Image (cartoon, rainbow, N blue to C red; front, side):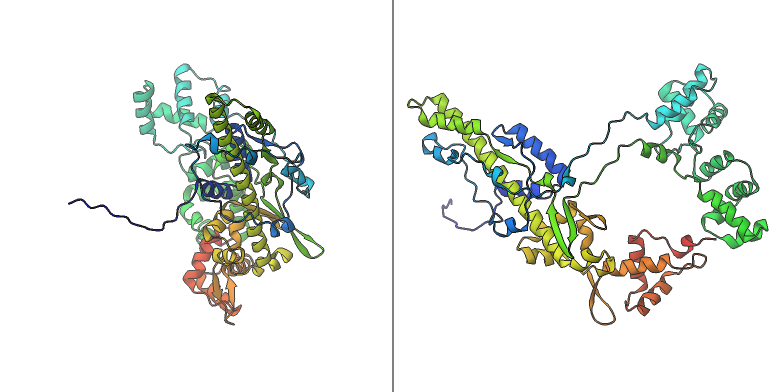
Length: 491
């Protein structure tokens, strides 16, 4: 049997404007600029001013109440034009809002573009080098196939039989392993030295063969060729006993090996890439022993609603006979004007959210920003900042995960300032960042001939007042990209 009844319930839904704001907040400066251009291309009612960029400083934000959520979204698509209040879209003020904002930006917000380059690819450079060798057509096809098999790090990670079969099935090139090996020797003569090696051992040997022969280079070649396993595991005592050489002689030979490049292709490709610059979203400066925070000017564009579209609305209001075509046009104009106003409001809320969040972080970590000593970083989690500024934790996370701040001590990713708390022997809460920094300093000051294992590192930190378990030391060491004691050993 069918029944019909009413059910009343409350539910929370995000309006399109709130979703738009959240997406804008998580964008870093460069991505935000791209999003701004896309919006201006899509909405002709949105225009940018030609004046200098404005600054939004603390005083302006403190007296602003734009941090409230967007008003509930109303669907205007089916709204009759007779209900449109034209006066809402007309401004009697000859001076737009963006003209009245303060301009306190520094000159270092100027955008600098990198010069355009047309680099030759790594593989094309190797092909060009092959032109200096006298090869017949068959040999050149094989050599070019081998070059195409080299990865970006400079290695050929395929066996000779596999390449012989591949050439036959895919290229129609019929050859044998002996010919491929002969062509591979030619590849090994190309620059950078070591290119075309099948593994690290062969790569290092090829580079040593290109060096000027000396007794130390000869010793280094013998070590790589015959004692590679002992070398990689840093069993220096075994090497001293095997070659009957002094510490200084072995140290010099190992130094020759350490100067080699384990990724010969990586250096070439890296040098031809356009350097990607990190654009800081904030800047913190110390002025008369006080911290001053500024928001990057490129995050505060001069936007306003198109005057032409407002004039269209005025023309429609003044006209006596309103045709259906005019009503349709006004409905379109209204949608574009609404969209432009929503976007401008979202940008203003984005600016305020970014500023108040970073301002709270700056004051929370005041000692660090004044001194630059990482051991002064306090334990800080997202909830600490969310409670200070009255925003949701997810909003703080969006700001922290993708934004950079320029400090007197370098440009930092904001999320690096967040850390969990641990208690020292005094019962005081300290940041895990502080413990990691102390651990790093201890390892840097250790005797590299007898590096400290994790259990000894734990004892040293305990003496310094940090009761940390050995497994926790191992975890922090891995997070700091520091190898185990055996791999830190030096002659």
